[in-house]
Length: 91
Image (cartoon, rainbow, N blue to C red; front, top):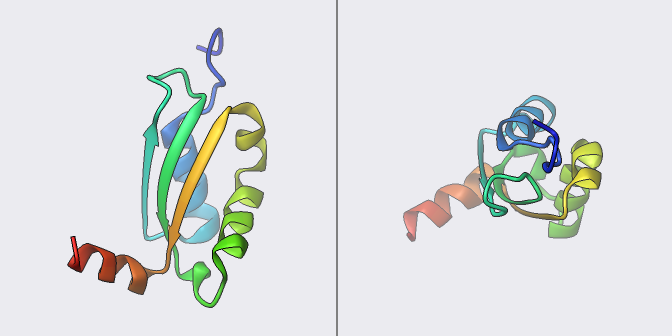
């Protein structure tokens, strides 16, 4: 499995974010065509309340430190539950 891939999967990332950030919603998209090198994520967690976007990214990156080191690109979009609800309402 880990021949030409990073060994990082969307499921692994999702599981860690739910466990460690009590994320209520996590959507992870592998942008690398399945080789596990580039991921984009939407993460909704109450732990993001009253944190700046930079602080939210740092929190996510600290949880996924090992995985991020193994991949090429990581783009998280972090929302509080309230922000996510509003974003869904305007969609």
